Length: 212
Image 1 (spheres, rainbow, N blue to C red):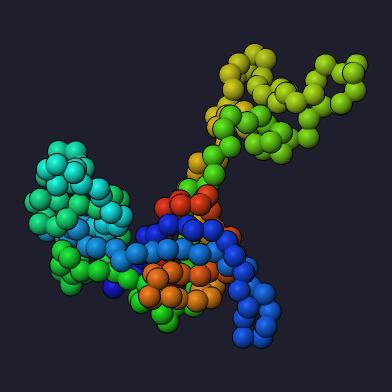
Image 2 (tube, rainbow, N blue to C red):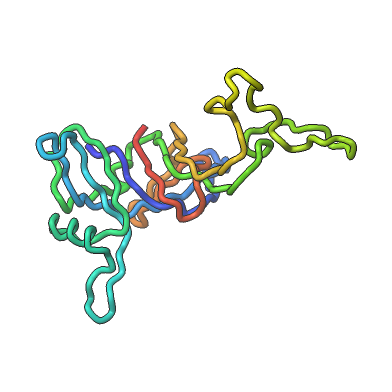
């Protein structure tokens, strides 16, 4: 079976549980994911299905979908309407599915725990104190060392900086997975999944919800 579905992070809110306790939840809108391609071991070397989601606008005059030629040819070959996003999910036996099948939130009706994967918020270029939690130097006026990384290498041997040294650089925009989040509610009419707690990324970010 397909054990995942893709959707968008709408935001956080809170609901009341059966014991009248407030539960902080993240709302994920997971519209039906359409199977756009079936990959088998005979044709592609592994078993997987390609899921498509998101609407693609059309040109007013011609009515054609606004996709480039490679993607338009891909969808035409599969005989399905273009979607905005394409993602792959590994399955045990891809021959059980066909192009056009839908993966909906109803598949998660009896699921208690899920793993949610998304891309964390970008923080831009950050120094070692913000990025890695370095202590920094003295804050007094007489000090000449405040927020710099300090000594990062050796003098003569091996006279280079080792790989993996914590330095300033781009912070965020990493793929983050939060495991074993509790499924609080499933709304099949509005294609919503409510999970307890926070998930990576900002609003309208693409996330993958996978059965734990």
